[in-house]
Image 1 (cartoon, rainbow, N blue to C red):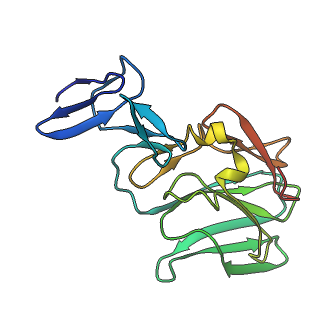
Image 2 (image 1 turned 90 degrees about the vertical axis):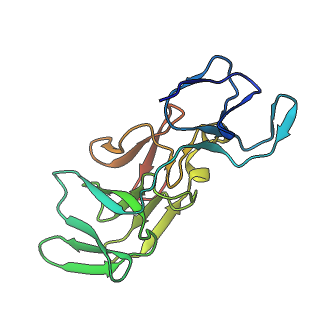
Length: 208
C-alpha cells in the first residue's frame, strides 16, 4: 500500500493516474481516493473549478435495507418491505381492528430506509438515509393508506452551508451524522445532520 501526502493546489500522480485532489495543506490519505467538490467554483493552484458538490469515494452498493424505529406506546403497527418483482416498497398498517396494505410512491430499488412510527399519529415516515445521489425525497411522510403526504429533500432540510458538507460516494450520499431517532416523547423524528445541527420533523403535521 502506498501512502500519499496531499498538498494544497497540487494533483499527485502515481503510475500516470490521478490519486486525489485536496484543498487543505498537510492532509494525508492512505487508502481510497477522495475528491472534495463544492457547489460554487473553487480555485486550486489558480484554476477555477465549477464542480458538483461533495466528496467522492469508491463503493458499489445497489441493494435495499430497512430498519424500524417504532415508539412502543404506538397503538398501531407498520411494516414496510421491498417487493422485488414490483421494484416497489409495500406498507402494511394495522391497529388491531383494521388493516391497510399498499405499494408506496417514492423509494426505489436502491434504498436504505429507516421507518419511523411515532405513537401520537397514525402517520408514518420513511427516511432514505443515503442510497443514490438524489437530493429529493430523503424524508417521506405517509397516511395509513399509503398516500404520500409530504416529501422533503436535502434542500428542504439543510442550509447551503450544510449542503456543502454532504459527502458523496459512487453510489451514496452521507447527509446524516448518525442514526435518526424519535424525540419529544416519541412524537417527532429527529435527524442529526452532517453539519452538526439536529433537525426535528413532525410526522403528525409534516412540518419542520
